[in-house]
Image 1 (cartoon, rainbow, N blue to C red):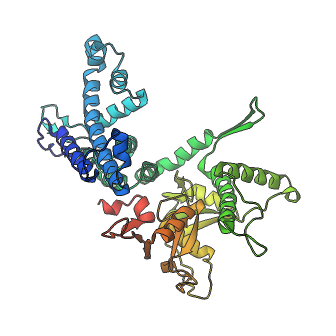
Image 2: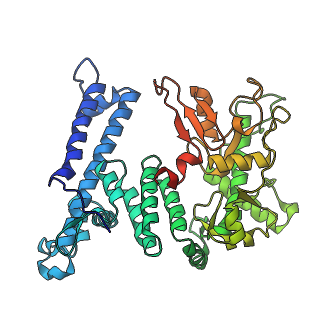
Image 3: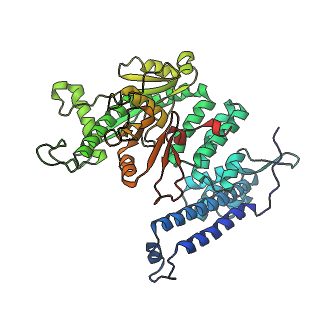
Length: 476
């Protein structure tokens, strides 16, 4: 039985906004130049802020924006409620001269109709309700409502979560839905929106495991590839590929791109006869490298003797729980593909010799090699990939990361062990060494300790899969 909604002040929705606007004024005043007002207008004032001050202002502004969006969602939902079909031509939107509430909200805010519809949907999903007798009830998604009121998540994040939960809740246990909602709110407060969307897909697969396979069938039916040549002689390819078909394509192209980037980085600044880098500097953009990789794969398919570029050895990694593989109940994940796949798809893909099923919970391989071997083995990289999920620092796709020693092999005599390994993209690898970050790695978590000039308190920051992926136990 649902609990009554807590009594709220009529202006409670504005209290957070008022508080955070006051905080914004305080932050801005605190980071402005100490010598007083500057000349030249707002832009000159911004230009004289320190980097730390500019970041503080940005954080405060972002919080105010989330407050405004949360209040606006409530208002938009009320507009929609008063514009329902039961009101006919006397409904709120039509009385204002608009066909419906979506067009009214879009016109009032200057936003697109899709953004207006999102505001209305989130406001409706998080609004308090009433029983038939007028007793107050909490919203359908009270955890999201609380997060919006406290400005910890954005409207886009709330929309992604509520849309999925409304779709999956009809086939899921209500208590489990509540746990997943809390977990997604927790995730939304600490990761970018793109990473949250991956967690939303994962959550839907957990809530509705029977829906994974039908969804696969839908995606496979939607697959397509079109080719056309434009008036300038350029050929346009447009592909929509289901996860199972996309996995080897994506893995092969990303392997060639990673190989090119690795060779470019290793050759940077190298000159003379002993230099190991390429003779000619590689100035291609990543999209250009992808095109060249696709062309190399096509030439390879036409005949290995015609291949102009060596194909990097690569595999498709599918991560699956042992119980899922045995019972075929549940779902699995393909490295680099966000959409979960069914256990049946994993078994079908396992017929490919170039696929490695990384079975979680099975027998382990010897993964600590000490000082005997410098480079991390494939088994170690699989284990590090399971712990880190990609770049442990920024969450970059696992196709663009490498295993690195935390304590350097030569300088620190660091061992080639899992406790001394971390998966990093090239940018984060260079940033950590350049700025003096420290890294602590355990069996299940990676922590990054910022240097004093970034955080004087040097508070450790969680990284890896524990930061970027959905964890229900955190919210239970």
